[in-house]
Length: 421
Ligand SMILES: C[S@@+](CC[C@H](N)C(=O)[O-])C[C@H]1O[C@@H](n2cnc3c(N)ncnc32)[C@H](O)[C@@H]1O
Image (tube, rainbow, N blue to C red):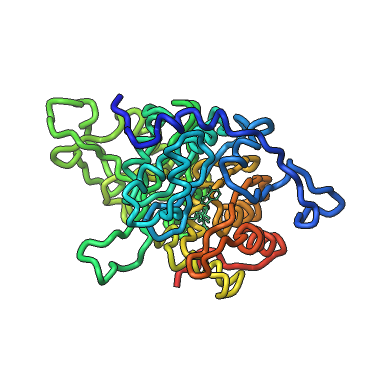
């Protein structure tokens, strides 16, 4: 398999193994345990610190136990202020850390190498934390999405690639650009081929509205699908080209180039059971009913439009409504995007990890999912101090933003998720 080469790769190759273990300590004063309970490392966790150390610290207790990982790392746009400061034993790395180009900016000609060196050990640790049937989702844009895909193929295995979804993050084109980006990519990998099955999604309100019961069917409301299927060569599937007598007496054959999707005995059985719909007047081409109660949900695909999953502006508004405008954060994700990921890859008892937590959207979505279905999902978030360019200083984002948002959501901040206006 072709692999991606980058400056520093030989030095970070096994770096995840040499990162020293540090102990996780509970800060009781900052915790919000359930009534009567003591704060513990088995609760939801928000870890303040660099995720390289935090992920390593989680290994003894959580290796192989995380069901779903979502990460939204710095996209390496050159404007985010992320720093490469891993303590890798190599003169090259020490030089990188010393240079003025740390935080990594646009003028830094080694910024892609630094980003890849930063991601490599973290992805290794994330993979170790993932359960055998776990799934990882990673958001990224065109600055690094192709390099990230190559890295993931190498670390997770190209057989473990599930899909790259396209999340429509904007609502209109950027006027300064002639072909501006509308989307982020969401790479999805599992840990073991075939060990995992993604879930079907719950019906949206619109999809639920598509079910009705115009014939008073005792099995309840239903939708229907055409029972004809493609068959360009009429000499094939002869036994699926039988004639059907409609309730109004008309006799029909399959339309040209098509056949019926089932054999005649199966069709007659379904007709007897009242599962075939011929239209209100009994004169329409037959359709097969799917009852709401039997339908196990909807399949997802890789097109994730913003009317379903929210967009950048919605995400910013969600934070501002909870924390006020002074706490605006530059690159949040909307709760609805995370809700899609949780819908695909978690059940009510799942453990979810986000090691680039930012404003804590993942925790918000986990709490909202539990509120909706009575689940017991738990989350682990990691957030380090962040460089603030305007103030030229490091700020404790974990306390002021990540944890504060989560505290307010737990305390019942009634935030209307998915209000897109
Ligand atoms: C793009 S933001 C994530 C936004 C988040 N998904 C949300 O909805 O708010 C990436 C975050 O990762 C944090 N980060 C970057 N490097 C990190 C590291 N080594 N350890 C922990 N957090 C880090 C940044 O400070 C930033 O807050």
